[in-house]
Image (cartoon, rainbow, N blue to C red):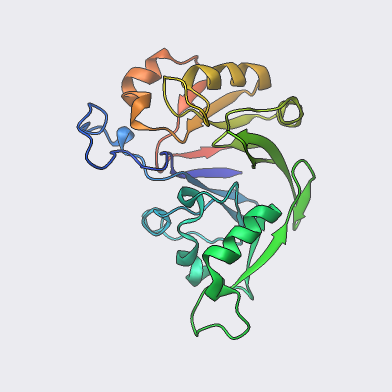
Length: 255
């Protein structure tokens, strides 16, 4: 498997509009973060995890790789705001497959109603929505995917386990069920918003502790705000098997 981090930032991105902190003024490319999303190539399949408002910029930067299906973690705008930009991929399919929980399916239909009318306007995106259940595996071709239940404050959302990868973002509480479902992965991707406590996201220290509980060979943190600190400074604090992901980073995940 090959994972590409399309974006590693939180909902405001980094730099944050109007901010003059050291991170937002940094010239280090590692401190520039678009909204959180990832592209995963598994054999002949190409999966997109979330599709935020920076999607067009991200996918063009990566050379417009194929996308066969979209996996959505939750309905917040920074994770679905770019869905309309999927239209070139929709035209290659008889409706681009979208996998999400029922509440997210409802939100997608509400936010993009013109995609689901009986007689759509010519050229609009077309989607084939598949509703999934938290904790219950499903298949895309020969790939088994397990939705991993987590809590984003009070909102029940999902991460995904795909083979030797567990991808979790926007979590504050990772229940024992998900810890057990994720155990044995080679690579863990996990959100780490900032240093200080937050009501809906893991802090840096909480994320480090969660990596220790799950026990992957290697972990990458994503969904980071400018309050995480400078990439170079934070990286020096991390255990050897934990890294801050950066926009455009490509990693190989062994079978």
